[in-house]
Length: 202
Image (cartoon, rainbow, N blue to C red; front, side, top):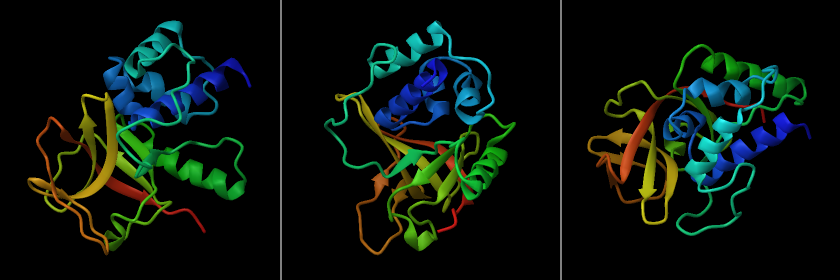
């Protein structure tokens, strides 16, 4: 594994551990989103992350640079969605999928791809494995499907979830019932609006 590949594996592990996108990680580290998005999303990107960038990311995660987060931790179960990881060595179908997702995100800051892992929105037509394109710049409207974060400040953790926005609540849309979650912009924060979907071939 090259030093660049090792860096990117670590950055993705940090994102998964914190339950946040590349854009949110950049915001927390107080750097331009492209600093993280370009090397993650473009296999041909020639540069490695600087020591300063690595230190900032490590500080956000409470780790040392290239120190991997623990595999288990308190607070949340299996993630509802995970950041989409581009696979530069995918087969022809996978490569086409990567290209489609990259084109939907290219040239527009604040657009992040996520892979749905649960069925909380299956009655909205969103299934496990679907790739959701989240635009962080859109203002949510009633009935939008949104990406939100549920914070546990005492544990320093955040869970990324996808819900239907019915102001002031976030709702699931599946065959099971769940308690509406009120958006308070402190413990529950809407991060963006889903404005695209890619469904991989099964």
